Amino acid sequence: MTKYVIEGGNPLYGNIEISGAKNAAVAILPAALLVDGPCRIENIPQISDVTLILQILRELGASVRTINRTTVEIDCSSVRNQPVPYELARKIRASYYLIGALLGRFGKAEVPPPGGCDLGGRPIDQHIKGFVAMGAQVEVQGGMIRARAKEGRLTGGPVYLDMVSVGATMNIMLSAVRAAGNTVIENAAKEPHIVDLANFLNSMGADIMGAGTDVIKIRGVDRLHGGSYSIIPDQIEAGTYMAAVTAAGGEVLIRNVIPKHLDCITAKLAEMGAEIEEHDDAVLVRRTGPIHRTNIKTMPYPGFPTDMQAQIAAALCLAQGTSVITEGVWDNRYRYVDELRRMGAQIQVDGKVAVIEGVDHLTGAPVRACDLRAGAAMIIAGLAARGRTEVDHIYHIERGYEDIVRKLSAVGADIRLVHEPDEETQKTPQVG
Image (cartoon, rainbow, N blue to C red; front, top):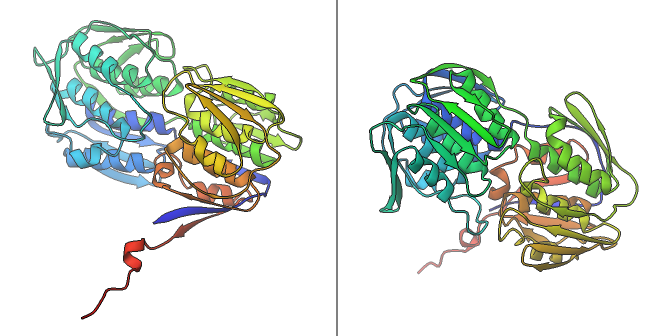
């Protein structure tokens, strides 16, 4: 059993380097299945989701060579079209990108339903709608999602998404780049990692236009060639550390970012009293005065990201006045509220709305990470609280944050990783 132990109350000072974007990496790595020849992918975050995808690619027959800590070379020339291993895929939400990539390359795919964080109903019906529009038959049978192109190869066509879906947009892009003919995705999501996936595919010979707008046009090609590509910085990791400085106080230069991607986060933190200076590839975050109340509604990009909702809530627990958060993307994203209440937070939830009454201080307590972003919120609350906070279920956090203990320790946080034996291993065996 491992957990984070945090002694709160220390303001943060120094520099933090942001890693590659998790949400881009977990789509770009499966996209290597579409490439003929080796592709070198740089700025890969060292997180468990990436480790799992690389392991799945190896199981499918890909050659994966580690160049250095953040760079791999992947050659999928010898990949076999076989079922994706169930035990690996069930641990990660992004395993669904393997459906689009395998369909695009082989015309068929057999992939387990996605795992990852439990955030309520997160169906992949929009993904399937896109595959069907391109001539695939899709069924769930024997605990597997089985998809097959009726003609052996997908055929491009119009796809209108009933709701803005990042996952569906990216998955349909993956399946369409090697389809016969043209595909048009309308009501597409516009997040930075969608643009990054399109840029990766285009650098390998795809023909994608309009990524970053609500209409994406894809002209199918027969093959993609190898090449090199560097993944963009992680918008949500950067936002998490910005929220941590806002909650705990101090001054931190957050490096290796694209400030434009952070506009929606920067605007709200500035309303809360943080001072933020933008540089070419960095942002300086400072908070010395009180935290002010604000209202937030999560929305698709360029709106405030749902993946920052829990972290901003942790900071707002210490704001002066009443803040209101409205979750506009996912159901069941307030499970972390009970954990913050253990620390003295005053939060009431009604459906998709959370009302936060700011308190004078939070008090350290044992809490758990309910999911990836909720886990980050527990760390932020622990940094700002009085006393000791212990965070368990940290495997959720390790899915999306590289070396978070080292990064926070470097700016003055008192946080450490503690290994404890499970209760079962502590029991003394009976003799006789």
